[in-house]
Image (cartoon, rainbow, N blue to C red; front, side, top):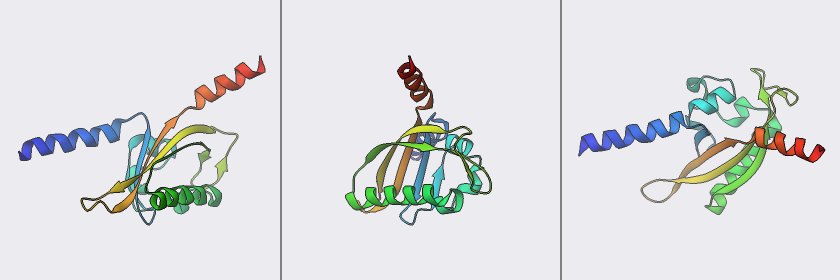
Length: 142
């Protein structure tokens, strides 16, 4: 039985880690408790550097505030949300370079619940749709 649980846990960890989507789990205070490789790569920080940080520690003020507002909406409504968001290339100085590598994502946020059904955080799955958006823009120009 223990071996089965270990295998199941390993499979779930692999799904999160190797997903082509950026995946994060934050606690109710907004601190990252899990970030996958894709999220780490997108925002140019090592995974270890992101754990325990908040959006305010990593992103420009307006982007951090947007994330906090959206996370709070998920917690208050106790329901998932799905929106399109633009994210820019972030430097170490939390500077945002929109002209450099602006990406568009479909962002799904959802409440995380413990065994007692109480919400303990927010999960986020970000799917990069930048190429599709560029193609749509090109088609509109024709």
